[in-house]
Length: 52
Image: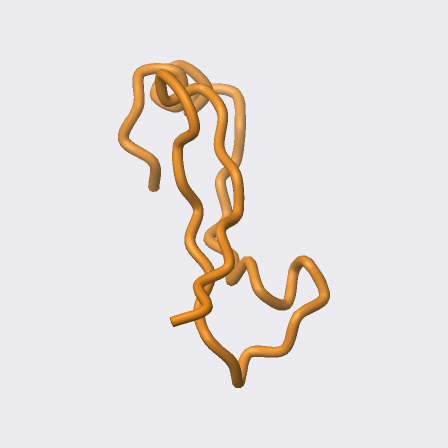
């Protein structure tokens, strides 16, 4: 779970389900991993594909 005040405020009203982002965006799972990263103050996130 993301440790952020904005997520904490949502917990009372939202059901969170852990998901594997690769199949959720149509990618296979037998490949290099991707990462979810914060892009500013922690309120916006993006998927980063790892090529290494």
